[in-house]
Length: 109
Image (cartoon, rainbow, N blue to C red):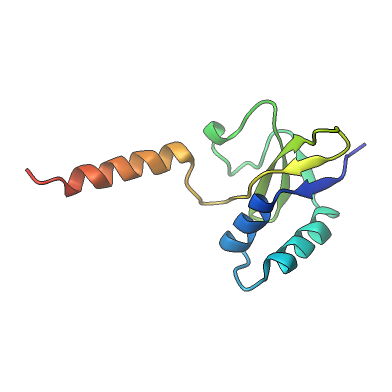
């Protein structure tokens, strides 16, 4: 039996920022609630996601090109989507490597 999914404010904000910028925060929250009722929870995460972004303890709610890592709520009644990851986005490690390379190119000498 699947537990209901709720979305943390951060997940709603990232979804809006990355996929639906024309929506208000309230509109994005409503859209996520509607879409999540017809979406898949995958314990392995989407195939497009790199292994370094996956955690053996985390399941993912998949909505199109977006994946939401899920954690049990404090009371265990629901799953909470904490953030929104999008196909083609950089992992924190890849972003850090890219930023280090950019900084090293700017240094004189």
